Length: 482
Ligand code: CA
Image 1 (cartoon, rainbow, N blue to C red):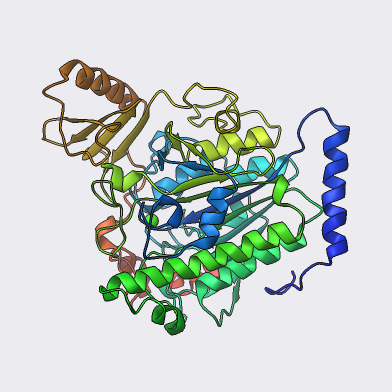
Image 2 (cartoon, rainbow, N blue to C red):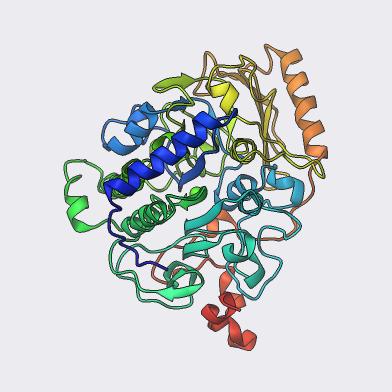
C-alpha cells in the first residue's frame, strides 16, 4: 500500500481520468456513476461552520463545499450521540430496528458490543457494485474481530476502532483513546496531528484511485474532545475570550484544513464532477465542548433540535445545483439510498429501509418532500421526537408531550401542545406506530455520560473487560488482527 503522502499525480493523468469519464458520459444514456465521499465530523455544533452563519471559526473549505452544492438547512442525524448515528448511516435503517441504541463498549473480546452482524453495510453493497471502498478515521461500531471495518466491507482502512482518540503525542497503550492507529489492521505510527493525518490519508486514497469508482467514508473524530489542537493553530484563536472555545475552534479549523486537502485531491485528479460528497456532523454540539448550536435548543444527548439537527451539505458539481439551500428535512439515513441509486443498485427488499435517494430532490426534479416524517428515540424509553412537516413533537418519559412549530420557532421555545391538541395527537400516534416497529437494545453499551477522554483514555465500562483474568484483552492489537 502506498505511503501516506503520495506524490501528486501528473496533470496528464488528471486530464486522462477526466476524458475517460467524459467519454463514458457521452456514450452512455445514463449519467455515469459517481464516486461517493462521505465526510462526517464528530460533535460539531450547528452554528460552527461559516456556511451555517458561524463567525468566529473560519471554515473556508467547508464553505466552498457548500457553495459547490446544496446546503440542507434541515439536515438531521438519526441519533443524539455517536455510534447509533453511524449504525444507521452504514445500514440505511433506523438503528433501533436492529437494536443498536447505545455506544458500544470498547472491548475486542465482546462479540455482542457492536453493529449487529445481521446487517449488511453500505460498503458491502458498493463493493459488489464495483467500488473500491475505504474508511479513514473513527469507527465506533464494535471492536471484536468480526466488527472491524475490514470485515464489514471496507477494503482499505486507516484509523482507530474505538469511540474517540487523542490527537497529539499520545503514548500508545491498550485503551481506546490511546490505541495505536492502524492501516489495514496493522499498527502504524502517526507523528503529526491526527486530524491532519486523516486528511492526508484521504487525499492519498483519492489520488491512487483515479481509474476506479470509489467510496470513501472519512470519519473525523474532530472536534470531539479531548481538545488537543497544535499550539500554532491554537494561537490563531487566542483572541477568543473563552479558552475552551479557542481550543474547540482550533480543532474545527484543523479539520477544515484536512477536508480542504481531501477536496483539493479530488479536484486535482479531475474527479470533482464525478464525486458525490456528503458532509455532516454525527450529532449536535455537546453541552461540554464549547460548541455552538445557535439558534437551536439543546445539545448532544437530547432530541431537541440541538441534539440531532446538524450542519449538512450535499455536493455533486454538474448534477446538483451549486449554492442552493434545501429546506425539506433530510437525514443521514439518505446517504445509503442515494449512494445505492448512484451506483445503479436497487435498495434490497428483504427488510425495511428508511432512506431516500436525495438526488432528484436536491436537483429540483421533484418538489415532494423526501420524508413524510422523521423520528428519534434515545435511551430506549427516555426520549422520543418526531418531525412531520414543520411540526415537531418532543416526548420525555413521565412528562407531557411538547409541540413546536419549527417554521416560526426554530428554537423550540413555545410549546403548542395545549393550543394544537389535534396536531399533537396526530404526531404522537405516528411516533407510537414507528416505535412499535423497533426492538430493544441488543447490547448494553456505555452511557454517553461515561465518556472519558483523559489520559486514561477509557470509558468506565471498558475497565472490567480489561482485567487480567480476561487475559488477551490487554493485547487488543492481536485481537483486532485475527
Ligand atoms: Ca459524536
